Length: 391
Image (cartoon, rainbow, N blue to C red):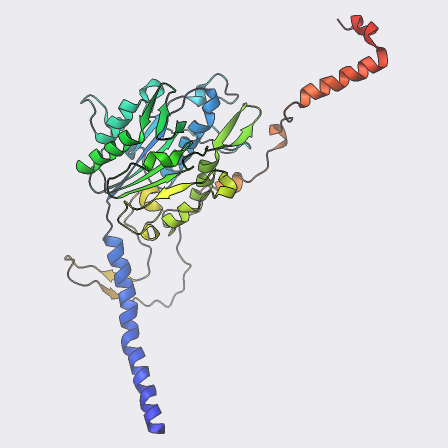
């Protein structure tokens, strides 16, 4: 019996020695195959603010915040189509010209110094938006105003503005319906203008805009369900308007923790701004998407394709897909620190700062109440007969 157990122990030890390198090699082979079998080769973003007028300041801040995030994660301006229905940075009511802020502490200027607006003012129309998506633009249209995507492109489409059940308003003068939007996406698919598409909309009853989608490989998110309003956030009394919408505010907060090598996936994005924070109920739709959302990285849409992998291992790659990837471990005696990406601008800390004293403003009705108190004290002390000495 003792010899039997000794034999089993030796047999188990031999199996560990034989199969452990195989498992180790397979793990590297799996990572390498996943890395080099990416379904897309380029990224594009179409970011649209559909609202005009000063009281819609927050919608411009919404889209500029997303614009800043995708640029930080690697999508260049040449692959971003930015549509702003109004120029809040140059509005005469703006107390700080050439700036747009997304937080009341006025620390982060999302307008920046290098913003490139492709469609502005009255150029932001339903017709131009649909033409950009479908590629049906005049020959004289410059490349900066075109969506030059192909069947290997992952596209992020972000819309913000005022909407209702099944429509989104443009410029308070026209609207696009969910049927028109769904048909435009179908044209894009038929013309092989995208590989995968992520649609995000921050507007009232936003979920109604993706109900009619029927094209494959589309994932959609909305800030509110049908019958719900999408609420504003960050009121600023000096400007007199709200600075952002709630959903995009927490979306920006989430994106600030994402870096080009981040492993966060779409399931993490679905958890952004729960009802306890948004008041409305964010929604998402994934039935048209072919991949599991848990396997889709945030950077597949918000970042740019970067064929870079930080590793200490030497990987021999073959030319054909049928041949396995051979992995050879390189042993080094010298210990070195783990490699990582440099930290980005600490916006996560900035947006949680308390407003400075110079940015403090009295609450609503404070000045009126103060003058009322002064007049009451005056009348109580001197009476109405001394009122003539004032005027």
